[in-house]
Length: 272
Image (cartoon, rainbow, N blue to C red; front, top):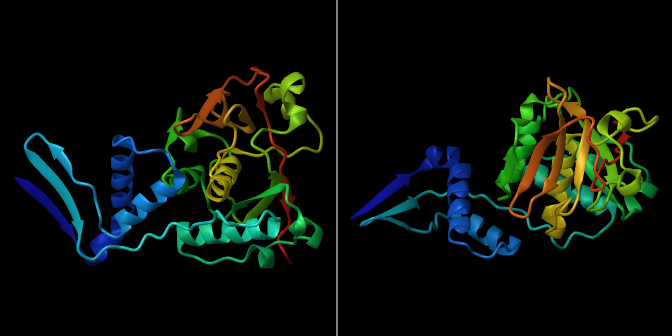
């Protein structure tokens, strides 16, 4: 016995992302290698209506899309290392996530010196972009996300009124002056003068871009504090790569560990 679910037209477009998520879950349940290129191929298969059948008892469940939506995951692995190229990659991701086009160099006052650098990650926060959006965008690329607490409960979870761009160090680890013997608690970090620390949204966005370009996630052996992103009871947000997915957890504000640090963010002004 076979059950076939058929979706067409506008309905297919509305649930296209959900279908891709179904295929991603099949991909993981079948224990295929966690190879980003393979994952992209399977996601594209979902967009083309090519779904893996699953057996439940004597029943085979099959999903078919007769008018499949086109979900084209950008392939950014050939991106050159300059900030200028990484900005273009972020623009491609923005179009993939939202359907809208942006040109960041036309929006923000970046210098030629900054554009030529190869040690920076751009962090783009469109107006209204929330923590929830940052998580949803990760999932759209096939990345699992664990939320110990709903990410919208943290301070700074609601998006800004105007677009924002920040530059952070291009490193898998937090800034060296916040790690190891230099480690501080979040309460101590927010007392450091002239430092703007990356928040949860910013880390998630930077991690998404870094993964899309390099295949590597931030903080595979460390964690990044988001010192100003706090729960009502004072718990502080943090993020790291847990091996099977991105982990967004809270920790005590007075806690301190040699493998935890923070990332300084340099804001870039909007052009006037």
